[in-house]
Length: 117
Image (cartoon, rainbow, N blue to C red; front, side, top):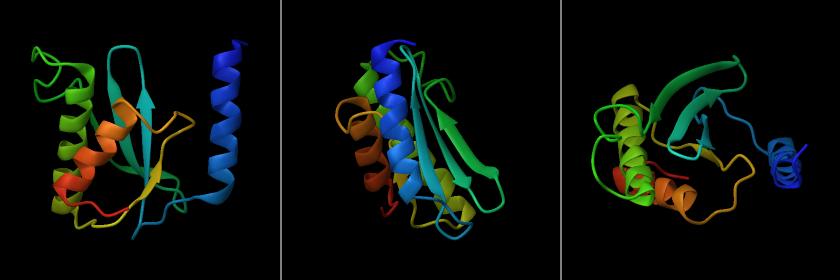
């Protein structure tokens, strides 16, 4: 396995030992690909995804903006969906990625949208 991927998975395991989501306070899990960014609100007790958003929906991907700006819009989008579903607080799971760049931008967008974590 690639050293970089192996390192991220080790960090991910360390994080997941500590945090988990409930129906009242779901886990906000981030996945970052080369082109897109995805986020899910997960209830770990029931083992199901409550909400999801990505940079590939609602025309975000078609806009001529940077990936960091797209991540911010995805954060706002997931916050709107969470508010509509009655979710106000979440547990942030950066999924082993470092907290800067697109991951940080997504988190700030979600906070600006009204989510608390």
